[in-house]
Length: 476
Image (cartoon, rainbow, N blue to C red):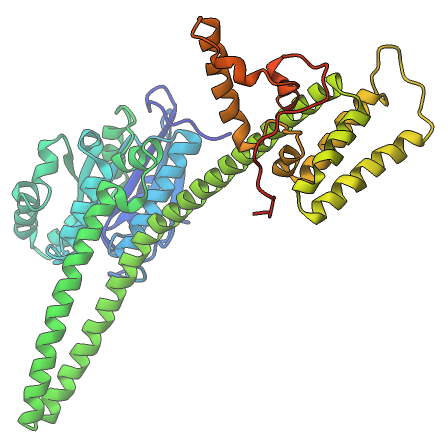
């Protein structure tokens, strides 16, 4: 069962992330606090933690999980890769297990001289990863006090600590928002005192978790991702300018025939180009997820559009079929099969030769089927009668010769584009006649008028039909 990240007091699970740059002492702190010798501790500035690893141990009545994370300036991976791994892990735990952190311990080594450049970028990224409110659950922890005492450099360590706390480029803005500071004195008691300050805190949702899970943003669109992206752009511009300067100096060295200087500049150029390529790869990695999300969105929208269009086509076909069946049924109810055949043959010269053949073939097929022995029908069933033959003939002709050819022989099935227009005009004439406007509707009272438009409900006793001009059907 997944652990539940709730209040640490009362013996519940307490999750604390340990973050910082490579060589700050994260793994040393976790090993010392947990007493677990399996925690790998690196030496120097080379990374030893390459994956996010939770270390769980009991502390009094509390079940503590310290989460070891790769350094933001990992020696084997770029900042973007490390941010991506940490962000995805936090988002996944929050989404699946509702894991919330009771705190974050941000480690910083006092002997770290990398206070400008990557360290400042990492602090910006860390601040955006956490957000404003969760800062109250952050403890900036300095390491290296024992080393400073042994080297009799305690005063310098105190100055460094003061600079970190008061300089607006470093911790000062985050301390104003509730973050605190602590000193790790290389002992288990010191480590547990720091942990004890976070145990009673209310677990929080980090800004990166809220953005990626609740708001469903891509990493590059989060505040932390945007910060990294901007820093990558600045580095790209800086590398470009430096490479251009080195190239100018190389040209000058060639003119002066200074081979040694030219060789040194060539090495510098190669190193800068390598850094520039790494920077470009970092940017591509950051934008990869967004491009994938955009492709998934485009594919989903395309599938939706195709599905809607398919539904529209299917609905139109179904509507046309229903109208055709209704019209065919009206003919079948009002006319005998031989009357329909007579009407077709009387007007068949108006259509193309191949359509004439299709009309005769359909008539022959229905007549042949009617000669076969019919199965006994249930009482009340209309199957197999003359009405059924008429309907089957008309519906069989519709997909073969089309609605225009059927209209040309005097049997429109309601799909002829002219039929609705003529019906509207007829209704207007009938309306005028009913209102006493003279004999406007008289022109529509010809014999058998409504046999061509059987849905008008008029007299059906005649076998003649209204004639109207229909050009020979030449197909689309």
